[in-house]
Image (cartoon, rainbow, N blue to C red):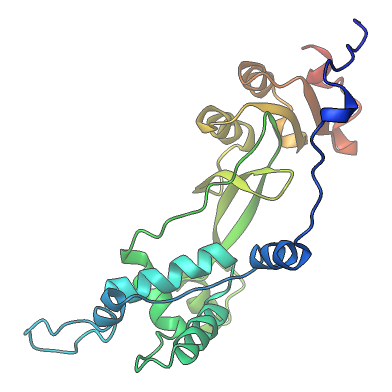
Length: 241
């Protein structure tokens, strides 16, 4: 390593930076944490929905009002009831003659609006966990079994497969039938991932040759699959790879 070269400027002519206006400097630091939210005149005028002229009940809030509330919810990571209270406090602070959409209205109208989602940034390859959980469906079969006190209960359920990063962000998900193989679905989840996978953690359901090959395609080098005690007698497929 080359030695650091000395500065050619003599200390006599070097510029010294010193904070002299401490009041203005501290004020600028405090301003960095200042949060100001307001509704412009266009948003205030378009808050209430316009009558459609059709028979039946009319919407009270416009798409702009619902989208504004849902965007605030996304930015500040709020629940629906907290979003309702937050928007109500903003309207109160601005002393506006507007009504606040309740949480049920926000939930119902969110299905027909495209709410912007904040991008979850990552610096490089991620650490991934893939697992599945059962979702029970209560339908006609269980209702008849309870009514007639029958022991033959037809239970219906589905599998929700999730590919989750170590920081808790869900990268991919898929809902399948209860008989779907975890390893096969896991391969499909790896194929749709848009990020490189540095390491993988999972249970014995993913201990298959095809799944290890899928991990190799995404460049995974660190693999940790927990084999249940009932399968530890046979050599794991991990030793073959």
